Image (cartoon, rainbow, N blue to C red; front, side, top):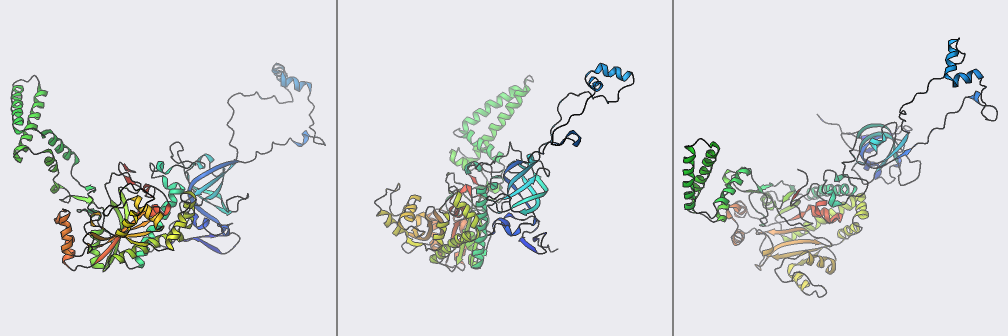
Length: 630
């Protein structure tokens, strides 16, 4: 059944026309973005009824003025407003003040005056709370701005509304605040549709700013903060921009496998995937440790002694538990002897440990890992479909506590058939500028907040990138430039063949070229085996896009299409050829020149926002020793 798109409209009581506030399906609530990000701040909708929902960012309660004391009856006053007291008879005075006399009067016919009631003593009756007005700053995650919501205490208890983090869904009338201030409009609520209360003692957020490193301990709450919410909106927009760019340029989106059998980058820092019983593996490992350094003869002698002990215990029923324990001990020793006899001799500890896992019993019958890169698989589709890309998580078991590294990071990987290194460099440069321009145009309010709260230079930095071109410079030229530097001493000596460090790259972009640079033709030892060998046989067709104040954002290459060359590289690096036979097949059957690149998506978000730790731009960061939410 076709679903009808929910388009929210609000109607002014004083007009017959309707105005479309937003285009948000499946709910009748108005997104605050559609109100607060207008040029007039939402003034054109004053006088209209809407429903909004969100979380309380801050709050205050204002008591209403106390009502005036009740006036005395008219017959208690005389002209001029002075109080006139009634005459009181002597009998009435005696009756009201002397209980004994009052009782005698009641016996002889009573009195014309009613008796005074006896004063009652006890705890005072609870005083009803004074009426008040609650002012709430509410955010719904769609924008940096918050809407002031005014709630009368007659609608809901202020104690439920005031705590930071409280969720509310309210209906009311938009109006201009009575007092001039920073709020252009406010919502005067007349219906409370939902209240999600907060346990204030346990809620980790407060009105005060919480440091980002502390927020990492509460990843399920941190998007409620303005900073993290802005970063995540920018991240979402960049994700959409990625697909838009490649869709516009005729690329196809291909989902590569997360589970793989090969190490694409050749780094060896992989997460292993297994379904084997960990308890069984531990028992095998313990067994190996027990027999390390023990000869077969020693074990057989021990088994003989334990066998004699069992026989002695069997002839006596006085110690049944000792007999059972001795039998188990003998059985374990015999199993160790059987293992050593099967091997023929006692192996060194390293050899035994290598045999402790039998992959044939695993789910895939071989060793499998979480992928560190999808480029090898992506190439097979580029060799059939032309230009393809993939956008997904990649995994690296690196224990280094780096501010730019996490165990799980998202990558944009691109492969283009019939393309060489220069084509890949041009595409990478265009893609990078496209993302920067997109953020400036689509995330204006969030970038203003980032400039105010995080990095004052962020907007100007992105504008310079959009309107300038990257400098193309070879690795050889970079080494020559760095060798001529005399005003700075680098921690690592500059010589041909060294990997360029962050210190080297920062100096080049910040002081020498003062703009993004493309470094190409790296030494073959510094790059993976599948990069195309250049004619000098020392360098490969690889490049890095380096940006000022940050470092490398994009890495790419032209990949080796020649079967003999890539076979030679596999052999040279000692890689298990059987794992790459399928990859070599692409060179055997219909080979084609192709190139591509990888954009580290999380680092791109980090660069744009000016934050310093990649864990602060990942929704649920995983790093060594920490998996944020189980």
